[in-house]
Image 1 (cartoon, rainbow, N blue to C red):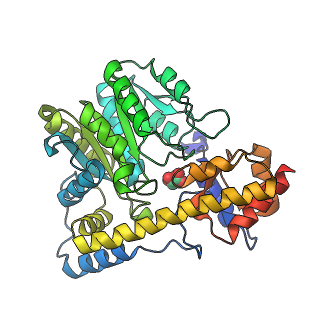
Image 2 (cartoon, protein in one colour):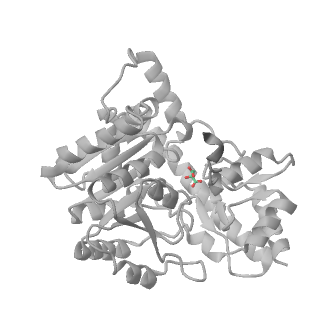
Length: 393
Ligand code: LMR
């Protein structure tokens, strides 16, 4: 019966990972998938994670099932990290999920339970998996303008003009910080304007928080989300611990609905039931690592220091790359990289130039020029800048 099975549409990020792995060239450079690498090109297990894991191994007495929502200590710790007390606990329903990806999917399915024709507005440039995930959950993704034509800044007017047309019950997907792929974030004023627009239209925000701590710092990066949560009756959140705890393969995520107190139990029940249908119990180990870290003052300090080191290294990579590109190309079109935030920027290159970088120079970035700034180091930055100058010549 499977002869009619269509070939899957391979996600561009995954296709690039496979192409990179199959490339036999020495000196190839991977700037595709969003993974932090240190100066030596490694993605080490964080020290705080190692210590938390050692503690868990020494003290854990059982691995029997928990509830469908997962470990309460983890969910509470994540609520603190994300919301910082901006809303009372009595308004927050949350469940653990296998990574931020599953959190996005669970939230989309939650929306479909109440509105099977809901439109989910997504920024025109976004994580390549957003639209497929939303469509797979049976909802309609629809783009709103985000990056300006020069590729440097937010198209604020375009974004607010497009979103002025949202209907009550539509959902607006926003990147909490470190917008993937543009690195362009909303300002404090933009978040306030967004909250006012959502309040006026009755559309519900859905904040995807995958890079908390990689922009301006853990609390500043959650400022927009906290503002929406304090101001609006309903806010949806998908959060990931892949990057800020380096727990990529452990799959640690949270799906959260912030709602009026009277609806919390209903939402918690619906999210737990969606977990049951899709994977039953969320993975525990990574979440337990996170709660062990966040609930121990000394360990939390170790983690914060490591995260801050990662954040400042990525910002430094941005500064050095922008300067190198200025020097190599004699142009200022790459200057914005320096002021954008988080792991990614969209380099203003054509598809042919991106392909040339891969074929002739062994440099892998996404087809649209999305480049992992956290994958660079002092050796690869000049190589990249020179290669870009060559393909532009
Ligand atoms: C990315 O955007 O590269 C990461 O979020 C990894 C992923 O799952 O796509």
